[in-house]
Image (cartoon, rainbow over all chains, first blue to last red; front, side):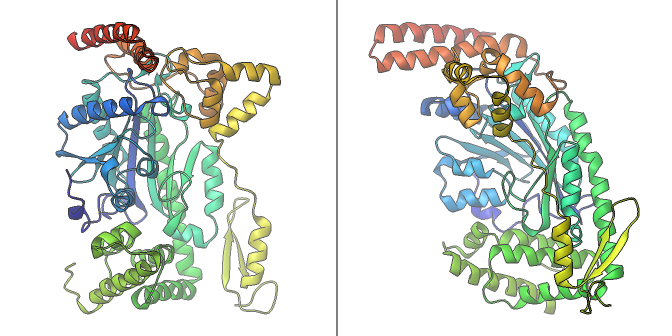
Length: 359
Length: 170
């Protein structure tokens, strides 16, 4: 069993802040939806079915030899705060956290691989890499899927491909997504236009925590909408090809702001930094919003005493479950806001006086 | 810099990239808000499953036909079309076969295609169809137990074992 308390102090793969184009592309993620042929889909599965699916998949999944050793977390036995913690780290989905019955997740130490059992489908395989790294992520997930397929029989139809609980995933069952940080497109109000054009080419745009979630901190997930009739490689390419275009738009918008609105931009970023360093109580939403400005400020060289990895760590450590686990107690919203402000002050002001680069 | 529409200071600097070349606008907050909201179109919503389903069923079906369709159920997992329509989730792999006629236009609507291209598991040929029978047998066994028809339940259990052992033995 993974010791979640060990994970608390790191920032996880998706916010590691390295990899190609990592000033704008936060992470690359691919997931595959798979179901066992001999069980009903989750909505028609009895408690006994779910228990059997869980123990069968758990057993098979833990046998595969992947880069790192996989460890299993029984999500059904976790406390609410620990489930929330795994959601914040993008290791399980909100749906998986909030549902009921036998379910779990296998995670590797690097937090690149997560295998959710009994989510919407029996098995959801996810591989996440920092930065823009879709092709490597595809190679890794393809290998994992093939290893598991040697041990179980997935529901597959010669014409329709992999059969999934929701017809929106049928075929490849693949969702290819990139998480982008697009603050300048938001400031220049071009973001909606960009999204409209993405939807025209069947790409979906979602917020930080997937379907239905808000775009907090100017983070957006772009992913394929279609899963049938195109190969996995083509879908990886479809998403991958649009990323340089979006990076270019965001850089142009940043250049424009620097050139034409330098005082306003510098002011906005400095104020954001100032609030984060001095606030006495602050919500998670405001923190994300301000950290987003500061992150852009660091990338543009307007703030020089702060490093991106430190900032990425603050994004994750100030989320509700992380904050409480770091503090070691459960806190209500008001106390969380005070603790969050304290945490931010401590980490942002310490860096100021201590430039040894250690953190 | 002054706002292009009034005498206040321009705090919003907008570049429009429509019609090929960039057009710059310098506006105060109030006029910027006016400009931006007037320009806003409703962002198109990606077709949701529920929306596509509702639309598709509204076309070319009488209430009577729909009611009849709603009552049809899958012989393997027992889900009715009504239940699928309501929750947007299918009950088992066989639903793709038994509701084929209803699902096909839906799938075309979502994906624009009807045929899978891409990865195939090595073992599918002997897999899915035989295995789906296990779903039905297990369900029937549970029902037999609930009805206290233990004779039937034990017969079903034997059938399940035969399939499971055959699968494990190969």
